[in-house]
Length: 163
Image (cartoon, rainbow, N blue to C red; front, side):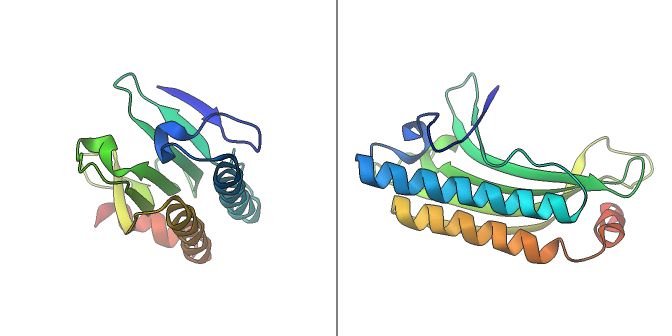
């Protein structure tokens, strides 16, 4: 997988958002960069670092816009706040119509015995959009939702890894 930070100048986003004219592309890019800034704000409040939104490109050709804030309150007690925008066709659902799936999630280290060695999704919120503008607005809302959730003590989230 290749991961590239999304800035006001690059990379191309058509692999996720489809063909766009210059004005729509600039507006979409600015909205995605702003969402990344929201993640950076969460990270700063938690004393962590976030790189903003990134374009993930997999060998299969799938592309996603993702951003995450990783934190925790001790060894094996990681908590990740994740926002993602993906084209509806990325996972094989090809309808011939434009569409996007937007997700906000909180993932925590497994606390089971024995440890499964993976993260558990303890919160997930999904939205869908049929226009680029709607998709970018839903991504911004997903980040706002994560911002509200990150106000809960990190230990509260980490403890949910055993649920």
